[in-house]
Image 1 (cartoon, rainbow, N blue to C red):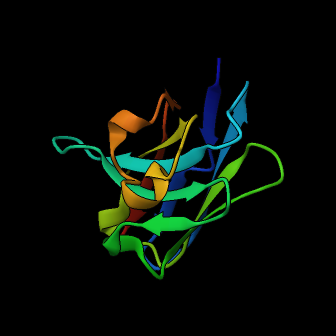
Image 2: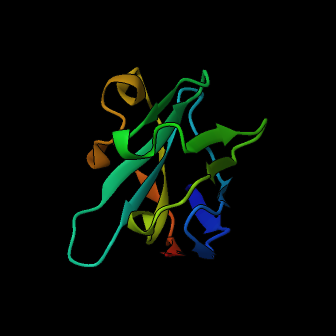
Amino acid sequence: QVQLVESGGGSVQAGGSLRLSCAASGNLYPSYCMGWFRQVPGKEREGVAAIDNSGTTRYVDSVKGRFTISKDNGKNVYLQMNNLKPTDSATYYCAAMKNDAGLCRFYPFRESQYEYWGQGTQVAVSS
């Protein structure tokens, strides 16, 4: 059983930065993918960034050049968010895919592929 806990959300002015953390516990397969998704009220959840076990990353176009996903030597994943915009305001979720098999590279934001989800952390960006 894998559990994910997000932290690091908060309120920040436009142009500021936040660093989200996802602490993972439990057993993940050697080939895995970690992703960040976000959701605002009334809209569907969208993929933001993903990273596979080799360190290959994927980003949604709207955050390219501003956000960076990374992982440490364990099972923790991070999302560094720079130059934040009001449109980045959302609840951010960490997700884990146990058996990647290349899906993280080609279909990184297909929600059904992720088996485990955190409860979310809120990010509010004011202008």
